[in-house]
Length: 597
Image (cartoon, rainbow, N blue to C red; front, side, top):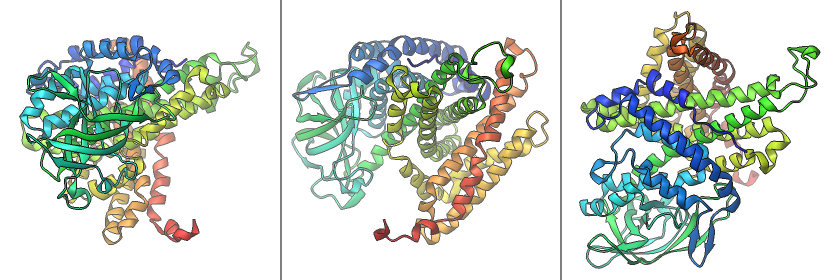
């Protein structure tokens, strides 16, 4: 059985002590986002996830979704849980009050999303995509479409999808064949098939709003010819009531490695009625609003499963007895000690813990910047915050999901043979975590986005939003006695990252393949250094309270310092080997011809 209790103490530390998230209540529209309000919502969210969603996680994995004659049914309990979820307002936390939302910060939604996915990832993908669909419609659609669809997406009575992939193309969307032709009353007729559509058909909501990429008859070749259409499962009448079924049907659902409770569908569009969003031939630009939001959400899924894996492995390691402690010797009075006494087990647990706490800080920090980018009254501050979010999006998506998958595998290892069987739920975590490295753009694609787009964007200005504050913090704390042993490792790694950035930029100008060949290593290196920076920010706050009895919580702060030290000494050094790999460029792989494989 999986073990999970929402890590509210650590969440509050990151939100209130490290980030001072109460600053959001000073922004227009976020006045209600006080620390007390945030804490109260978090506590209720934890109860809902632990009591309602966690018990359904194994049921969803074992039952999966079922498909019969075009009808998809979710696992037992999912429908009631979804009704309870939307009924309690969890779907609408950060949605616009104009359409029935609560108007709270995206940061708070990140926190709730983490808890939802820690307890039931397969359930969590349904509301995630609906929020993304709503954000896209709100940003790019006409007022008529907004007024018709956003209230229902906000309250959860309707759900949303993104329909990109076709059987012959995934990442390279310029190859799509799906067609849209002008129809009556300004609508379009959509025909063709899409696959890998998460939540494409299910029994949770009354309607499903598909956001579909297709090409008009006069479309130019490639991505410049893609348009975006809103295609409802059920047509909506002029009075807002549901009308006849649209020409959208589910052809099948996929049999998958994990997230069995999530319906992954093949959708067939047969002369379906759809409505253009944005300008013709410029649909991919609009779709990136949803894709980038989903990428941040998928990063949270990696963190979420990493947390469940850590808690489950820790609980097991404290109970399972095997072998004697090398430190205590044969006189401990027990035939065997709990395996948590063994160095290898502790190393695995601390690896997961250090990554979880570090990536939580990075994700929440990025979410804070996301809120500032939309609400701050100063346009320059909004721009700078948005540019940092753009830079961090591929790192959040790829690094957090890689680390979440690693934590799940470590949890299996801690359990030994018991981790490999279904009883304890560790093998499910591995299976569920694997998809997060693939969907919303594989992690290799995220790396290419980082080196191919973000590094050179606006003559490198995006990078300055990370390098400048990180460098300034390191320089300001080099002589800080409480932090000195943590600052030096990060200072070295940060310097190497800046050097690697310059080398990639220079080589990439002459040969783009040079940058592509080291992109994955560079993203990993950037992620390690970014988490190191987060650990320094956290350590600075914790150091002031670790030696006293501040709020009766001195042990928490002391352990925060210990975990920071573990990260800097045991995990951050990987950045040095990644630097060496980056410096070798493409030569070692480019020496092979295609026929050599």
